[in-house]
Length: 87
Image (cartoon, rainbow, N blue to C red; front, side):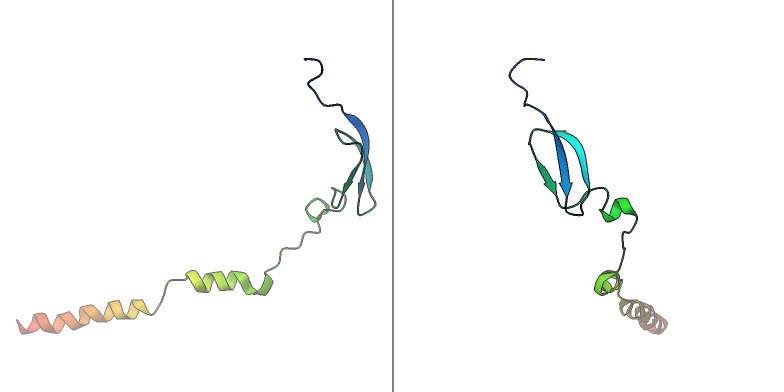
């Protein structure tokens, strides 16, 4: 490795908002974080998956195929059948 091009690394104590502390290395002398592996819902298994305000149903209603168009399409062949019988 070349000299004088790499940043200096320090052993630092990371402080989390939940009170957890752990040691790591960093270019900064002190680290304070809001969420760590001890308190993050993904890592603790307390993650809540919820449908807020019916967003899934809202999406399904918005992008669902219109069922009104299907009966109109069925009515069109019936209208053509009597016209062919007259010929």
